[in-house]
Length: 370
Image (tube, rainbow, N blue to C red):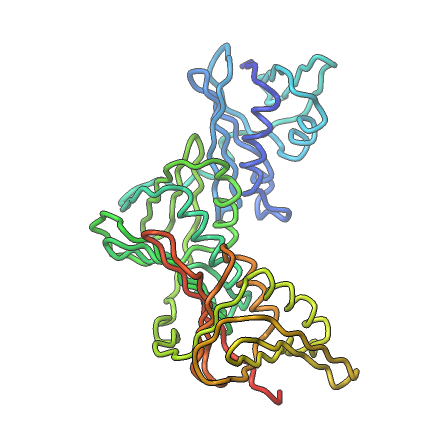
């Protein structure tokens, strides 16, 4: 088999597929890309057994064929070549030759039969969503997932479909994010927990606004867009009852410039205790004082920001890292901070939600005196 392809286009698709290749594979064959040429279309498959990526590129081939090619040497070769047509020849013994304008490169391929069969979409339910909602759902939640393997469910993002709404939820028990997309038209009521690694791949692979088909069964979720499909094995666990921790009555509300608040936190947190990252917010009628101290080193810092506040003056402690993560993800100039008491969770949200969307971020207080 011999086929010609644009080196740049092949490299772009391989960069997407490379996301599923593990640095320490369980099987040697999954260090490879599977190349399957049919009717002048090259289908590239990669997997680490938890995630599978399938993507396509047009080629000009003399016949159909299939082979597994070591990923690292192939990608390194393409990265070192300027954009040009290249010819790839696969010989009967799986030997591979790459011809470029500069010369010829030979490497050994592997038997395609040894490559794991990708999961297939059987017994699935599906919905189609604009990619901007998928990307916002992932960006808004993925930072709030847990790294604690004992809490397996929290290591992923909950995608909860409730007929007309899709919720993206993530929590690590210190912070929680709930992003809602409304105005869906489905007859689906299902919850899936998707590992964050796979969602990161989806987010990075979607490079333009387009429709994304999301299909799922009990074992896997399939994200299909353009000429790419990403398959992710679901986390088999029960997600905690997250709505119970979202405080309902929050009589105090501060409106603050998001960037000013974020920049102030970055400066003040330098002086915070490194084990708690605690900053104290003292909010009154027109201003918010942000302070931190590390008694072990006699470090302390204070800044004052303008804000619009309704309610009685309140002093509350938070983890500066968690606040910064939330403010970094939020969009818009101003944010709302809603509070009820120094020992109850606070809510951070945009001033206004986009039509058909809503976003709530919950952050637990750090008790003062800790």
